[in-house]
Image 1 (cartoon, rainbow, N blue to C red):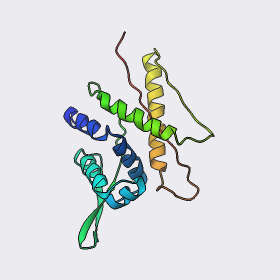
Image 2 (tube, helix red, strand yellow):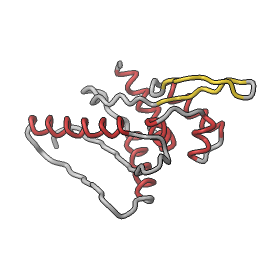
Image 3 (tube, rainbow, N blue to C red):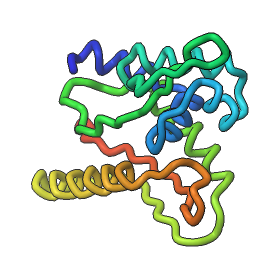
Image 4 (cartoon, rainbow, N blue to C red):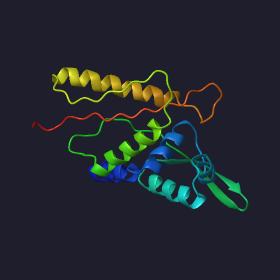
Length: 169
């Protein structure tokens, strides 16, 4: 993915509704109508966000089906969770969107096991590499384990990760 494509993709998902859509479409393919019902959006609004995410290369059309004389696309999010290449910097809007989405999810948190950390640390390069690799593997494992919303016995969770090297102060 080129730097220009990476920036376009980050801009596309730098919106709280789009983050929710990507989360929803990790476990199953859905049409705009299904996304609209699940997230309490209008069909037009869901379609708009799906088209935006699709044109940025973040969604794939898994199938199309005939619905009342038209065609309904079913979209799927297959996360490309490779660490971002050096020099590709997330715009501030991306972090604002993540903060807004984390706040929304946090209001729905229930008691139970929670892992929360915020740290600005100085570590050795090999320790940074090992830790970022472990987090990368854990997030990929969660994405692979995702099941459709409201699957009996499944636990609804929130996982937000932002790890990056910072400039020296």
